[in-house]
Each structure stands twice: as C-alpha cells, then as structure tokens.
Image (cartoon, rainbow, N blue to C red; front, side):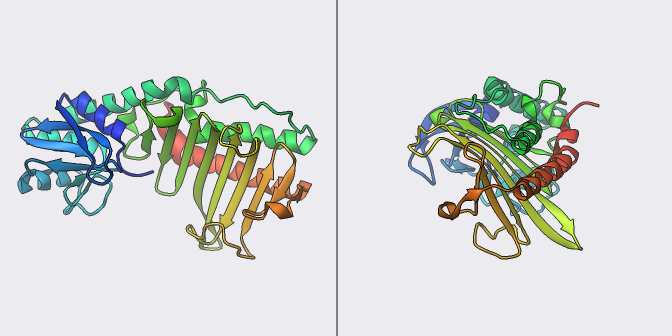
Length: 319
C-alpha cells in the first residue's frame, strides 16, 4: 500500500492543528472528502491516495524546502510529494509547518509520531485479535505442524498481535519500516496494518467477511532475485463464497507475473478445511495435499518468518 488514506490525512491535520473547512468533492473520485486550510492553502484529499492543493498554491520556495527535508530535488519519488500532490503523513506535516514558518525537526517528529500513535490506538483492539475459525479442523500430524507454523507467521505479519513484544515509538523506525494502519472510520468494519522495507512487505486485513495475512519477500538464489509471496486467509461465507481457510505460496523469478502458468515456478494453494491442494484458477483439478506439498509450504513459511523478523519486526521492537 502506498500513499495516504483519507483517515490518515484527517488524523495528520487534526494532530497538526490545521483549520478544518467544509468537506469537498474529491479531485479524483466524486466522494465527500475532508479539507483543511493552512496559510490560505486548502488541502483536500483526492478520494484516492494523495492530497491536493486548492484556492492557493504552495509557493515554489516552500515546496523546494519541503522536498529538501527528504533529500529530494524534485517531487517525483511519490513517497512524499508528486507534482501538486502530497503523499505521506510526515510530508503533509513538514509542508504545513514550513508554510506557517514554524518548522523544526523536533516539532515535525513529535507531530508525526503522535499521528501514528493515534492511528495505532484507534485500531489496537481490532489488530490484536483474530476471528475464531468456525469449522472443524483437520488434525493430521502434518496439518497440525502447518497450523503451528502459521501461528508464528501471523505474529510476524501482524506483530501487534504479539503481546510479548514491546514496540518503539513509530518515529524511531519510520525511516526503516513504512507503516500503514487504518485507524477508524473504515467501511465494512475493515482494519488493516501494512509494513514494508526495501526487500519485504507484510499486510494484515480483517473485515466482516474474514481476515487475511500476506507477505512478499525478495530472495537471492544463484545470484538471481526470487520473489516469494505467501497468503493465509479465512472467509466466513458472508460474501456468498464458501467458508474456507486457505494458505497459498507463489514463488517466482518475477515480482509481477501474477498467477499465470510458468512451469518452473511454484503456485500452490491448500485448504486447511478440506486438505485439498490446487493451482490458482484450477480448483477443479484439486487433489488431496501430499506430505511433500505440505513440507514445501512449511519450509517457505519458516523462511519468510525468519526474514520478516530480521528485515521488519526487529527494527520496530525495543531491545
């Protein structure tokens, strides 16, 4: 996930103390979006994933100063700024404070930290609990082993559900790990947490229809990049699809290959409800998962756990 959500924008501007204006229609999608004013510039959410300026343009010298705070010479990286757009919580707070002539590194860090802490607090109850599975579980030895590893996997994809961890303040790790968190006011009672570094990303989502854990990591194999994507999801049937719990592994030479058939790649899905295994889009050819297939999934899960801990979680927790 990239960019800034409507709720993140609202929390950032309220934390900063900007003047709230009446909602307007989004610049990209015709939905009612929040709008705030700083020094005559109206900042409003696009309705998509960025903030736009209205009524008055941010002076070029202020924009250049804002970009320089992030080591950028032009707004083309999309991490914080784009042409006429703001893409991050910290980018918005930096720009607002420069406009008002009160920029200080300590102030920006404090406000940014407080915004993320508020988002985490708003989401805390929902990201620390997981909906109970309602169907009878398969209790073969291999399936029990898989479930044990999946339990460890869930706690690195969404480390906030691990009560044993003590986290640093967000500002202490935001330069190493990008954090996205839903906060409140999300449709369908959905909540999410997304964490990413340069070589790994994890994503946890939960709504009224179930939940999902996902990860993506880059691996080096024989001096070539390999891409390992893993997902674990539960559907409770409210979306009119079958109640099921599924683990999938996608291992490929290409990050963007999707689910197309490549003979040398791994594309495997296993239902923890039925014990069946299949390739994506080929559930009609499902067969009972073999011990070899389960071992492959367990091996990739353990590899992912190890690397996510090192690349993401360890950077967020207190020593």
